[in-house]
Length: 289
Image (cartoon, rainbow, N blue to C red; front, side, top):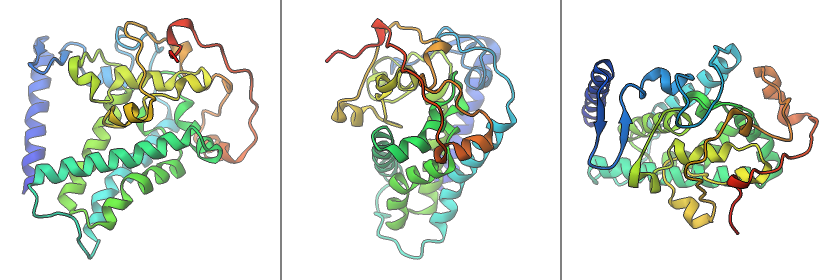
């Protein structure tokens, strides 16, 4: 019942957003989030409708290899509540209010996924799996689902498996899975998001774009999925206000010819691929020591 209420509220929010988009209105919230409605369209999230927020990322094209990759990873996220439904035990604090259970699940999953993500930039075999995600050379919403299935599994083990072992209730798991999917879209979208003070707390696109820089270890920043808290604790938070990333700033600089086809990406972690020189970090994107 709680899940249905939550989904109903999200649906109502979506309808209001679509209505605002059609009327080309601008919404300014008290929380300091500015979403120009004419820009915050579904097309703006999934394709290159404009580029004032993240820079110039090139035209959007349908890629069947990406559709397979992203579709399979989306199904794996959808499987989380199905797995929760078959757990026969329950240590989870079911007596807590539903909203508090969801918040706890999101924070715990975020911590686990962030730590796996952080380790993936420091442990060789994990990086080889994670490199598929970093091979993209433009930002769009579904980039968040562009992953090697083994790395998707590693993140699930770190972020979701502990919750399932505790007996995460299926309704909470359903909202968690939905939240993860939406957050991945928000993190990787090419939309003019102006989060205001929430940008210091939430790991949305304006910060996460810098994680996809092609300049070697310069991109070892902003690992958090939902919150920036973990990056503050790890010392990896980074921002360059006003700097517009371009398509030439994204990808793996030492491997510009990383495989683009899905079979090639499945095999890439297990092959010796050619490496070139790491491009020099532009002055405006260098971290201050």
